Image (tube, rainbow, N blue to C red; front, side):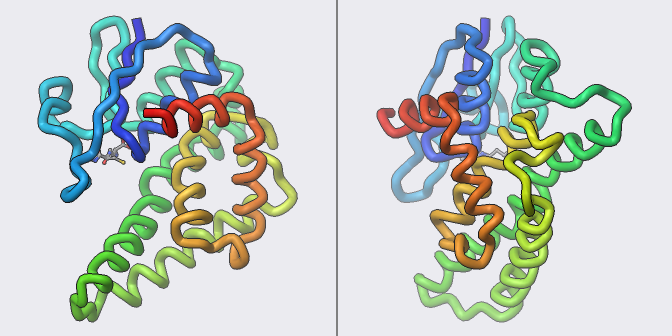
Amino acid sequence: MIILHHLNQSRSLRILWLLEELQQPYQLKTYARNANTRLAPPKLKHIHPLGKSPILELNGKVIAESGAIVELLIQKFAPHLAPTPDTDAYMDYLQWIHFSESSAMVPYLLTIFNGIEKQKGTQLQFLDQYAYNELHKVFAYLDQSLAGKQFLVENRLTGADFMLGFVVQGVIYHLQLAEQYPNIAQYLKNLEALPSWKRALDIEQNL
Ligand SMILES: N[C@@H](CCC(=O)N[C@@H](CS)C(=O)NCC(=O)O)C(=O)O
């Protein structure tokens, strides 16, 4: 039995999309962010001590961290969504899975938080330039890596795309960087054309 504990507007979209692609039966338990703090409701801590989403229950075992959940679900239910182990493509696959939640998410979130602080009138000294430089270093690399490609690894849909979709959606729509990063913008369009992406977005929008 698969249960996804899903917080609205969160990285849990990665898992919702993957579950829609897998077409395995699953149960969705939904949680709403606090409108002021943007935090998850405390009851999520009863499922996992961090109280963050996504959290997956797989036959009674509870697991957090979107990257681990993507790797686990693919190993168990959809090995065709990963390259053959011990190949160069598999190493690229692992790199992009972890890039999505580390190198990409950190400057993306710093930029968002920086914007919130600026709106509140905070005088920023270090963060402003740091966030800007890191964001553009990381996303220029991604844009270059996507040149001429429809998908990230082996030019076909893999777990790396399920991890990356959430952050590129934020970069293109929230930070509005489509002009600066045309390959990322085109890549997002490719993801948006997938039936499983559309189903996941539809579920998210109707929560
Ligand atoms: N590294 C974790 C991050 C999980 C995470 O921070 N989730 C956010 C939503 S995107 C969350 O639950 N925030 C609400 C809270 O911390 O209360 C992952 O990849 O799953």
